[in-house]
Image (tube, rainbow, N blue to C red):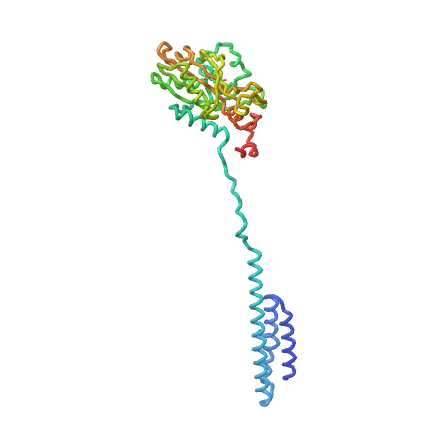
Length: 341
Ligand code: DAH
């Protein structure tokens, strides 16, 4: 009997040594120390032994059980530790890695340019006045003194709506009429921003939709000197303190006299380069004294009031400032372009 016990013990010890991992250990336990295990079953045989044999067998069996149990406990603890280590390693976080950058939005280049313009004119006392994108032909053209057959009124230049006499504004100048009619008889200093729409061939230099900023000042003592001073100061605050300006005579139906303002080239400082086409100057806006007919259409008596107006394109300004050569980039929504600013 004792011989069998020793044999079972050796087998069990060998099997335990070979068992790797928690599952294998549990199987081993069931087959040896468990209620139907080989070692446990030996206890049942004690009754079959003679009274002399029993104590020695019982003692040895208890020793064997205790040894196997201790060896099993030790191996199980090791296996559980290894399992935990493996789990930790699998879900490991490397806290030294740099975090992922969340995508951050930013203001569109035109929005930023608009805000620069608002800030500069705001500092000079001009308020932002919003006029409508959908405008009547009357306000967009007629009341601004456009002659009836002016080419800008042709079908191919304006986007017409299904409502007779209603178009998408082709410029922000119509806002002059709306502002005058609202403010009369007060003096006016407003900035009129907005999207404009023209049925034009889209090229690197012209888009079907673009923003404009209009400037309007009306009062009883406004002169061309105010226009020049205001716009020159604006150019210096936007493009740098040593910017030179020059005014060239021009023509717009709604101003008289009319002019275009150039700034000394911001790239070559007037020396001549490809951007200024070797003239040293960049055209930046149109302007002039508000035409008496337009003043009257806005409700102001042109014998008592004077005004100056100007119109500029933020896209063009941004193109010059940042060296952008294709106006189509602005509204193409290509993040590779937009994220550069
Ligand atoms: N409305 C003109 C355009 O669309 C721009 C302009 C020129 C506006 C002269 C003005 C101005 O107020 O005085 O091209």
